[in-house]
Amino acid sequence: MSRDPAANHAPFHNVQNSSHTITLVGAGLTGPLLAISLAQRGFPAQIFERRPDMRLTGASAGRSINLAVSTRGIHALREAGLWEQMSRIIIPMKGRMMHSLAGELTFQPYGKNDSEVINSISRADLNVALMNAAEAQGVTIHFNERCTGMDWNAGGARFRNEQTGRETTIDSEVVIGTDGSASALRVDMQKRGRLNFAQEQLDYGYKELTIAAGPGGKHVLEPHALHIWPRGAYMLIALPNIDGTFACILFLPFEGRVSFATLDTAEKAQHFFDQRFPDAVPLMRQLQENYARNPTGSMVTIKSAPWHVEGKVLLLGDAAHAIVPFFGQGMNCAFEDCTVFLELLDRLGPIGRCYSRNSSARGRSIPTPSRTWPWKTSSKCAIVSPILGFFFERKPSSRWKLNIRAISCRNMPWSLFIACRIPSRSRVGRFRIACSRNCAIPSRVSKISTGKKPTT
Image 1: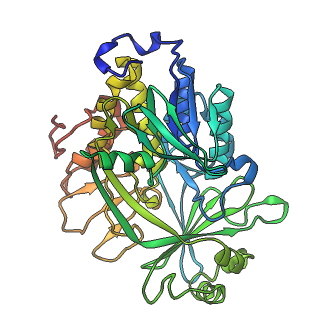
Image 2 (image 1 turned 120 degrees about the vertical axis):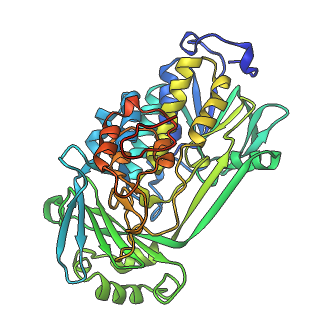
Image 3 (image 1 turned 180 degrees about the horizontal axis):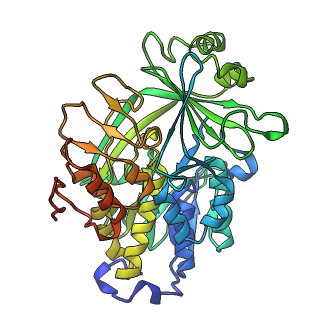
């Protein structure tokens, strides 16, 4: 793997015994998955992670929002030969179970049949499974190593051990940043200049809570549904776990009349839940304990470009593009980054040649979500994200409609959704047919209209 992308044109699959180790920063979800696929192609890989080994210390309480694995993520796991293993720790969710204030239940299926589902999985369980699979492929994971940036002159990544304070520079032909929305590599790229960066902190936060399993480890709610308690400007959701519990998440403004600022004690939170989520309270036996112990998390949207520096450093996943959890696509987008990158490697050869291609192709297609909240509904507005509703509709007078069911249940390019415009009176059926034929759809589509084919 040459530092000069033009100096080596050998096919990627012919470089089976490279003496250069690829360094990945971050052992969350994206890093181990990519390392597995690189190792399968004959490239030695190592991962540096600032946290201790969660398999020994356990996951951080309150920082592990359950994930919704959909088609894009499943495709990446299948490509790495991992889906059969991972499918044992997921629970398919066939639709949303809406809980009214009066306790009435309404089930809203995600798709036309049981094959159109999203899958609930514990972030911690998935992370552990990916790290185990990576180590089984010969990948070395170094824990308690905080990345402090790049030594651009020497061409190595700098790390500081969180336990000893020892600082080292790891010489590596290739460095890939999968270190999340607070990426140290991205910060160093910003200092170097010529990196466009936009960040938006949301006015809402989240707190993780738990619905305990029933007798015999049984689920006390319908397990094959995403449970939602929509309450206007805030909501509670619950996703099933394989151990019979439900991971609950309370989304609430940071400030305001009903907010985390006003619900500043466990007792106030208990009273709030008694009034606003009465049917959930009997199932949340440790509500006050969870509320007091678990931190209030924040959410951020990040967009950056380009994602690479001179064929040497590349950002993937949240390090390059972080989106809020309501769309249920953050992890799926990150896994799709791996898919696209590996496809380019297999086709183009040396890694450096793929950096600009990957950055350009993916950077234009990753969605930048609106701050409009996905559960806000009224006679003039109905906005529901893929994880919550699979259907996005602007005001009734709007010209456009977008069927986001295809985003989670199809593997079509994101850029199609970014660019396409569908008049509200058009035949949505035409769009659905197009979605089902994603393999024939160009990656950049400027317009879809009634009776017209997409144009590139």
